[in-house]
Each structure stands twice: as C-alpha cells, then as structure tokens.
Amino acid sequence: MPCVKFKYQDESCVYPKLINAVNIMCIAKGRNCLCTSGYRSVEKQRTIAKEVLAGNPGSHQREDGSVYSKNGECLAAAYGKSNHCYCIAMDICDSWFKLLENEELKKYGLVKPMSYEPWHVQLLEHTGLSLSQKEAIRDSVFKGVKKDMTVKEFQAVTGLAVDGIAGPKTKGKAQELVKVCQKILGNNFESAEETVRITQKNPEIWLEKLKTEQYFPDFVMNIVERMKGERL
Ligand SMILES: [Zn+2]
Image (cartoon, rainbow, N blue to C red; front, side, top):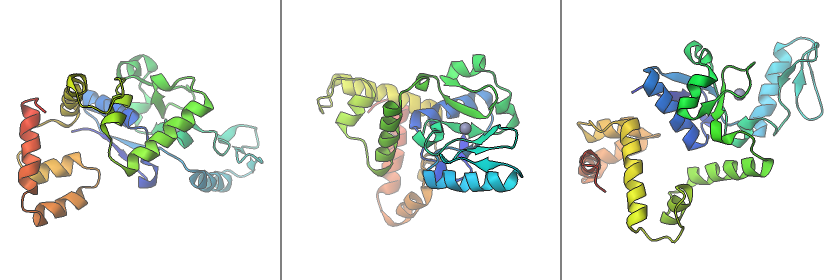
C-alpha cells in the first residue's frame, strides 16, 4: 500500500490527520513519498540553522535564529516560528509531489501555502491558525504519542458530546472510523504477522508478542475478521 515514510524518526511526531491525508493521497496516486522534514524541535532547528550557515557562504544568522543569505533571502525560519515546530507541516521532496497544484491537493484536504516551497504541505483546515491554537495542536500531538485515547477524548476529537459513555452515537462514529481505517489499511490480511507488520508503527514490539503470547495471533486475526464484517 503506498504511503509516506519519514526520513528522520525524530521528526515523525506530526498531527495524525495530516499524515492520514497524505497517505490517502499516496493511495489515490499509487505512489510512495518521503517526508524529509516533519516536526522540528528548537534543538533540531539549531542543527538545521548551523548546516544552512555552513552550506551557504556569506549567509548570516539573526538574533531570533533565522538565517539569511548575503542577498537577504530567508534560508531558515526563526526558532519557534516555523509551522514545523507545531507538528502541522510536512516537507515532501519527491518530484511527483512537487508538481501537484493546490487545486488537486484540495481534494485531500491539503494545501501548499507557499508557492515558492512546492514541497511544504499542510492541512487546509490549519490555514490562519493563531499561535495559541498551534500550541494546543502541538501539545495534543505530544500527548497522543504517550498514551491511548479514552472514550472522552475520542468524543472530543470527533465532535460528539463528551460524556465518556460509549452510547449509540459514539459507537456509530467508531464504526465510521473503522471504515476509514479499512480504506487506508485494507483488511485482506492473511496472517497475524502480516497485519502487525503493515499496521503498526513499531512492529518489532508486537512481532515479539506473536512469538511469546499464546493468544495474541488469534486476537489479531479476530480484529481483522471483525473489520471485514464492519462490526465492532
Ligand atoms: Zn516546510
């Protein structure tokens, strides 16, 4: 299945909906792509600024961390100013992607906000965010990385009334999402190992479990079976 991969694992902390939109686009186009820059910590920005300075003779760095060429062209954004610092931007340098116009990207909810950066993509819905909104998104992404989603959080992100009870509406929404997952991942898995390899971010953890936990392969295949039937 075509998808986006991250060149640097320390930059893969990106708003999940953005990654999903890029994956859906990859599937539609039948092509893989490589994200050469996703989330940037200030530390990472310092490293990048240093590299840009070294690679561009005559360039200089301002107090805010930004780097300018001798002609006054901005080569690196100020620390903390880039949308990459808020997990809402991805740089994809594959030539087929750079050729895509906004008219086409719109179909996937995506946009290239800067015409002079044909590799830089964001979600259309993230256009014109305030700094505090960006900070909230970044914090939610980092929170999401560390723990599983509760019923309340699921309700909040899917726009339902937040009561923490998995009633008919919540289950209905979950069913909708299962269909989206199926579209992205497919459900024609033949073995537990295949399922784990394709669907998990860190398959090595789970592949070990397949060997050591007696019921784990059956458990995985049960989920696959249930997804086929679109039941929960
Ligand atoms: Zn960018």
